[in-house]
Image (cartoon, rainbow, N blue to C red; front, side, top):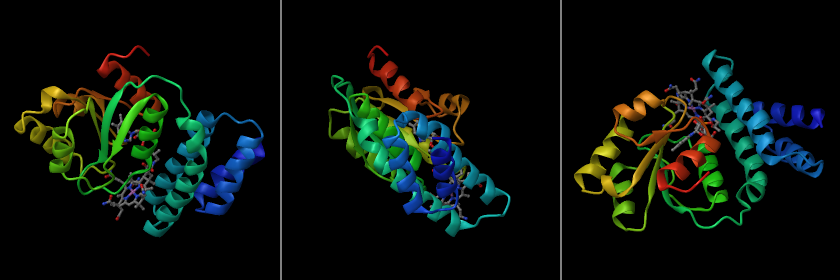
Length: 214
Ligand code: B12
């Protein structure tokens, strides 16, 4: 099993999508637990890609092909992660904020929320504040989940929350925020209801915000 998981990590780090898919299938066939594969192998692989980019070993194209390999591997894990017989817990509108195209983490959060019984309306990436407002105005929404990976797009979380307030909708929904540069303090400062570090934490937070027992 260790060889398969090492091969998976290497394939994502080096952007070999076919090898990554092959390794995920092999790991699942050998009985690996999908959550552990994600947490212990795939997420650290993307961290390593970020580290290589930061120190100049990787450039944008390498980051992009690694992201593609990660997405292919994730697509294979998805059926296992969202398989659920949990009762409906609430509806979440999710998206990556305006100016930001990172969606791997947001997609993961959406998958685990679905797996926990939430209905998820995923607005995608580069989502303007008005789009979040329109989605909430449509009704039936309990939570808004905002993702941002760039320090330059963090302010758009605050703008989105302010526009919800201006539209008189802020009190009708819980707002949760996340993404690598986000933390508890920032969440409080911008008026969000909570922050979680990872997708499992996002599920626990969502449950808390809608009052569903963990
Ligand atoms: C893959 C990647 C890309 C891909 C994105 C592909 C895609 N479809 O997502 C591409 C190549 C497009 C890209 C582009 C850029 N990127 Co980039 N990218 C990354 C990288 C390597 C990995 C991100 C990732 O997928 N991580 C894995 C996932 C699982 O983790 P995550 O996103 O953090 O999500 C988890 C948590 O944060 C949390 N979470 C996430 N969202 C939410 C939401 C809620 C509500 C909650 C509760 C929790 C939560 O749960 C998730 C799951 O556990 C990071 C490095 C890093 N280590 O983060 C750089 C990184 C984010 N990128 C960076 C940069 C600079 C860029 C570019 C500006 C580069 C450029 N010169 O053009 C562009 C910006 C494009 C844009 N406008 O968005 C910098 C950002 C620096 C900063 N602090 O601002 C980083 C940190 C790299 C670095 N070390 O310098 N990037």
